[in-house]
Image (cartoon, rainbow, N blue to C red; front, side):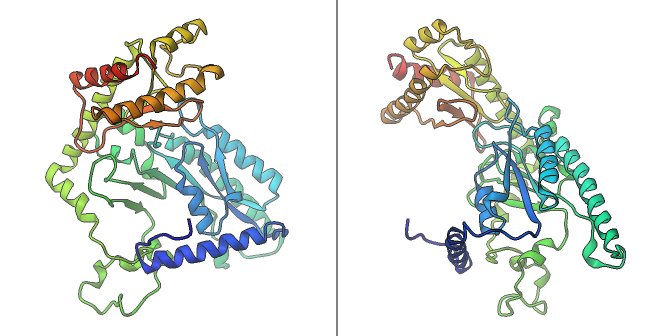
Length: 396
């Protein structure tokens, strides 16, 4: 694309500078890099694609974004994160410094939640190793650690991306609370009420424990907009945001809290979990369908199995009752084509809308069901949905 529409002049300037920087990086690709230490960031293979954009925009660069493998259930493998940090420390000789780790709480397709506490423990352990090395280096150069303001202890910023699943904080039910256990220990957290809670777009909350950090990072002090002498200036958050537009997006979440209360929102989430559990059990008990991965509370991923595919799976000795069926390579392409064709048939019929999605660790696209807003599934809804899929897909 050669053009796009922007939300504001600030975003326009960002696009301009980002494009210019990207062009410069292409031109400088073969130039040797500096020996100065580089900050590196870590995300899981289930993390949102926006992190790749963010490190590019901020100048960190995609070469300094490391993707950590996940466990079979989609959680970041904390052991692999630990090993990757150790590897960088040993091989980089101090040229690669971990500074940011993104925790995913509700991945878009799978719906997986990383183990926040395990990741925090890994980061704290490496902070101690890094600071011990830095202190040793300072001592060798006779720098007074206490008097030098540039020798503050290094800290790895831990961010929880709860854009999809972060609304689980409103539930008082133990099984849902466990998903976000440890979130109080991190540096920042985001959740999008316009996703799970069905608030109007755009409603995205960013929360950090570091008071004043947003203004320090974003403020330019444009006097014609922001002036401490103005009435109510202390309530003006515009200078603390990147775009500085003072939209009243927060009213959407405030209205939901006023109408439902936090306990009401929690009950809404719990009804989703219970509904999707009913769907999961229906799929497990129906030979026409098979789960595509381990189910998580807010996402159900599955395949539809036409009669001929069922026969092929039986012949290939695939366990269709497994939460993670091993689909043979020769059938994977067929599975994906069925998902696409069935979606189109259902859409064209006007009876049902359902998306197909790629899924890590599976070679075939699958169907995904999530519930946004105040929605739930009755047994009759589930029965109708599965029967409609069979009606239009049985002879594919």
